[in-house]
Image (cartoon, rainbow, N blue to C red):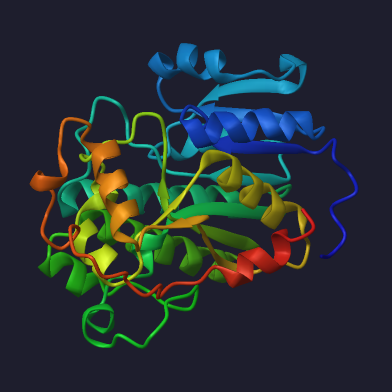
Length: 300
């Protein structure tokens, strides 16, 4: 593993800081000696955010920053050497379920990367994306001996055809961010996370559209909060990191695990109510790897 950045007193920005990932990143970064600009989209999220923190707040500054408002992003980034960015839709918006709403995430990514390019102090961007930006294509369905890694991209037309709007959103937003980063000379790495197992995870999570197919194809993967936070900080502090990193620490490919997972999502369900494909007794072969991330995290 390459040497970590020596100056741990640098300022970094976390956006959106109000969610489980954002608030945990704020906590961990302050514990590691950073001063953090916590960018929160809605005032209504402020109490929840503060309630999740256990760190000393002396090195914390809170900003209201809407990723669709370019100038509010610029304010939050002032003086920061890095940005940890994840998109959190506003609470007053419905869950992303069509391409119109997915377009907001694309515009947000454009604004954020452009703001980073215009902020002289920014040295690195850690962009949170999703495994759904990797796994959806005709190949996923037809070529069973192909493994998916960080070099793979979901086919947007395929995703539109099957109304996989979460994948459409994440794929287009990440591609927008990469295009701007390369054009503007912004150093960026992305974390393509599996399904985040949060306390409020439910069957309504848009990531889970096509979950039965993901299971059958050996690409239904999840990640817990501790591992996800550590991955973000690792790829930030390791000066040798580049490109995309798939991030997950659990794969659901065994029938017993699938039943347990389905019951966690819908506690009232029974095994008899599960889809036939999940009730299958066969073990799905794992077809996705996160070895690139594992190599840089081995000493973290």
